[in-house]
Length: 360
Image (cartoon, rainbow, N blue to C red; front, side, top):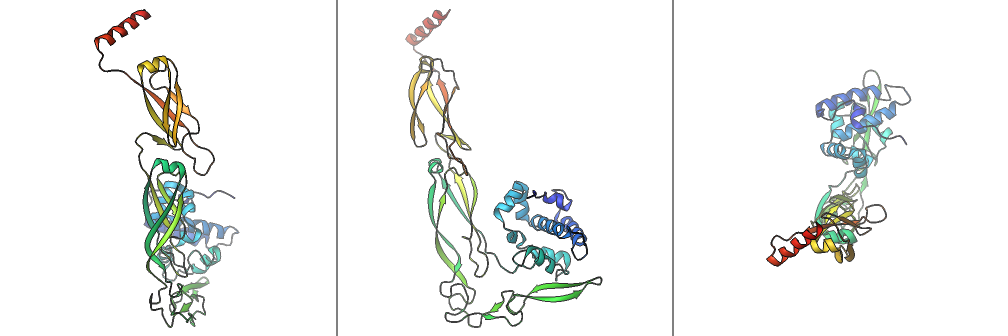
C-alpha cells in the first residue's frame, strides 16, 4: 500500500494557510477532479484524496492533531467516518446548501457510512484524568471508575419507543433516512442526496415515545467502567473506544483517559530507563565496597569498584520499566555521587596530609 501524501501537499497549501484560502483551494480542486467532469481513470482517487485532506485541515481539532503527529495521529484516533463527521457543514458552505450535486459522489466514493451522505450521529468524547506512580507504571494498574454521562435508556433499550411499541418506517423516505433529488446544473444533471426532513435522517418515526427518556433513547446516568492501564505507560491521552456518550442508533463517543505519571522521590525516568543517584563516601569510593541500592520492585546489590570516580555509572540491566508494545524492560542506571566532607577535625586532617605525603 502506498504511503499517504502529506495533506498540505495534496491541497497545494502551506501549514500557515488560513481556513478561507483552504476552502477556496479545495473548491477549485474538487471541481477539477469531480468524476462527472473529469473522465480520467484516477479522478475518483484524486477527489477522495483532496476531500479527506480538506475534511481534516478544515477541522481545528483534527488539524492540530495532524500538525503534531501526522497521519499516525489522525488514523490512530479517527475512522474514515470520524474524519468526515462534522465536515458536512463545511462542504455545504463551499458548494451550496444542497451540496451542489456532490452528495452522491461522496456516497459512491466513501460509502453511505462516511462522507457527505453520512446520517449516523456520534456521541461526545468523555475525558477522565488520573495520576499513577512509577511503581504502577512498572506493574500496570486495574481501574474501575463510575462516570456520569449519557447512557442508553434501559426502559426502551435505546429505541425511544414506549415498551411494547416499535418505530414506524418513515413514509417519506421509505426508511432510507434520505431523499434523492435531481438537479440540473446547466452542463449536466446531478442527483443530490439530502436528509429526510420527516424523520430527520433516521429512517423511522416514533408514534408513542418512551416516558423515561421522552423518545430520545438516552438519558443521564452512571456507568461503571473497568479498564487496564498497561505496564510501561507514559504521560498522555489514551483512548478507550465506545465508552463516551452513548448514541442510540449511532456511534458512541470514546473515553479519553489522560494519564499523569507522578514524579518519584528517588528515580528519574527517561522512556523505559530509570536513573538513581547513590551517595558514597570518598573512603568507599577509594577502597571499593559492595552496597545495596533500591530498584522499583525491591533492591539490588552492586559493587563500587576501588578507585571509582565521581559520576561513575553502573548499569543494572533489565531493572527499568517495561517497553510499551514490545518485549523486555529498560535498564536502571546508578550514578555514583562521592561525598566530600565539608569539615574535618585536626586528626582527620593529619591523616589526609599523611596520606598525601605518601603519594609524593
